[in-house]
Image 1 (cartoon, rainbow, N blue to C red):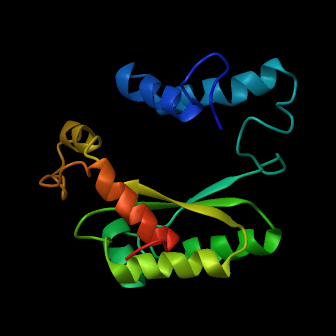
Image 2: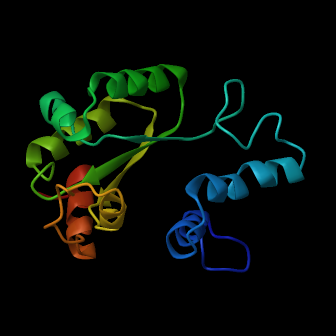
Length: 174
């Protein structure tokens, strides 16, 4: 379940605290959680980094929008390479967690949820789809860069809304 021995914390929670609360650079924190332990137990030759030829037993793939035009508008990149990657992972028999960032007014539509359900149904590699509800943690990054933040008026989504969205993605309710 990802719980660290003797603790109620999981690895992602520890990484989040290291980066957000302790201001450890993301690259350093990830290395401390992956490469360093792999080196310590003598398996860095096959694990501990995302490098061609190394083992990977799980892929996290973000689907930010299922409408190609909206995906391009909001991300600045086409949707097709993401879907092509998903198809290739499916053909390779990989295990995938489909991460679904949901932003109010951007992709919180029934059409998007239906498309996510269809992706799950048509790709055996998808173990589950995980809703990632909008939060405003990134506002400070934009301010630090002196850039306008397009979603400045949005508030962090409450947990009950995230649960409802997860149910829609899972096909449990409408």
